[in-house]
Amino acid sequence: MLTINPLAAFEDNYIWSLCQPDNPFCVVVDPGDAEPVLKFLQQQQKSLYAILITHHHPDHTGGIAQLQQAWPDVRIIGPAAEAAKIPLLTEQVQQGDLVQLFPFNYNFKVIDLPGHTLGHIGFYSKPYLFCGDTLFSGGCGRLFEGTAAQLHHSLQKLAALPADTIVYCTHEYTLANLRFALSVEPDNQALQDYQRHCQRLRQSDKATLPTDLATEQQINPFLRCENKALQQRYQQDTAVGLFSQLRAMKDQFKS
Ligand code: ZN
Ligand code: FE
Image 1: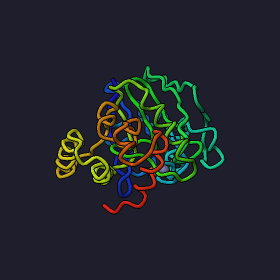
Image 2: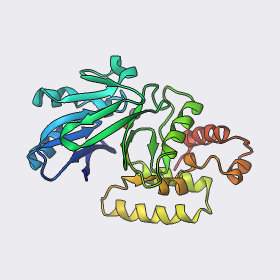
Image 3: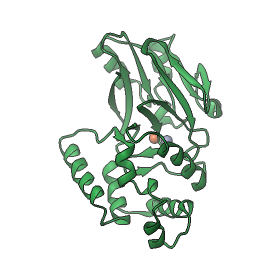
């Protein structure tokens, strides 16, 4: 078992920390800022063993240099396709590579997830998925570099993982995403219930993440594009056509 905690950064980022009770080491995912990580390591009395990076955006990479200064031997593992844009990577990985985090007995498989950025990757070790800005609870990443077809395909890869996969997204966008999702599927009972659940969490200042795939399959419109009734409602006859339309609608949506 890993103990996985969100470290809040900036407005709405989460840096995920991976620890084990009797293990002196810690791993973090997407440290956009070093401060929350340094503070956490000090509180927990842990050493930083590795940094996993999903994509090159500064809100996911901005803390790398300072963390490497504090922990010069830290492994810094990120996407080969974005290595030129990410400073200080010590290991470049791509689809199918296995990241062995020796002190943890967990090996993470690398999954290419182009769409939000072209070289975006995720890290998967049953049941844990770190998917960066690809899949959010109730939503998905914006198309900064890739096409709708690419992001749709990436989300299909994630949707094919086991239903009990725990999804560690990197932004607290859930409530805004759910307002959009309800505009798409106002009668979806599971979605209404999930919104109430997430509203309660936010009212007590708790993260709505992680989520799990089974939940997302029920409430996330971007994972529900195979649904024929939804396709009909938007006069689309393919999943990718509907996905593309929903992504464009979300960009314009005022919640
Ligand atoms: Zn991003
Ligand atoms: Fe981001």
